[in-house]
Length: 276
Image 1 (cartoon, one colour):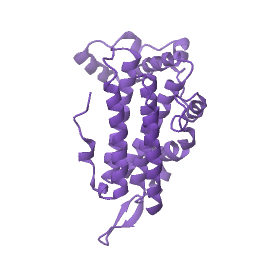
Image 2 (cartoon, rainbow, N blue to C red):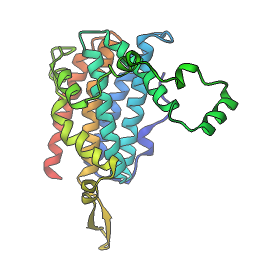
Image 3 (cartoon, one colour):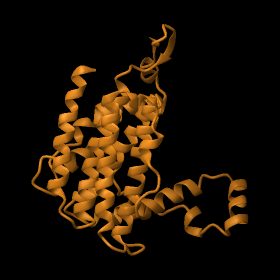
Image 4 (cartoon, one colour):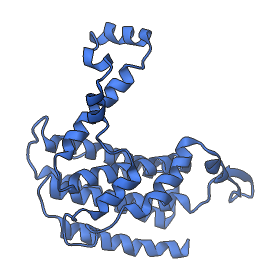
């Protein structure tokens, strides 16, 4: 279904800068292509693998939109944290989609129950009582301590993102194109690890805040001016990869040539950083 929300109409004042406007428009084009292809698929059965992918792509697109909005409104730390999330989403999605062993989806599904159990068992009793008053009794499995065997099954879903990214890059690509062969592991430190510092609020992240001079001559705290465009630009890279793989694996459509054309355009846009 086509979204009625026009992201480009809600972006911030930094779109007055030509290169940032170009990056935003490019990323919107990526998602427009994906949405168009998704509408060609036909009805999706509730509970199916395709329905799972549709929901994963919904979160991916919302996160991508939020990166552009925060970055163009100069909310740079928030955009950094979101790009970190967007990287993890792409790595985990791509690892699932490319994995020759499709039984890994079972591990993914089991992790749901492990997460719910870990949360419910640690919620205080008063919160549980309020929950049950509104929604009914909490299922016994949600608050019961799992057996060792169950814990092992819940933890079978890989937690080490760096290892996951490396393994993903070693899986067969979904097409014989440059975009399909593009790596993710190489960006672990520069995207995930660096921006995790912002999310975790550690000392390194504070050092990124500088005293900068405003156009009117006044001074204020901010992050360096190159960050907003760079964050949006790399969001486009992640979006292309995930949209290509979702289209190929879930929608069963070969749009590799179309996405390769976008990848070429993305490389052309990268030249704009030379003038920043």
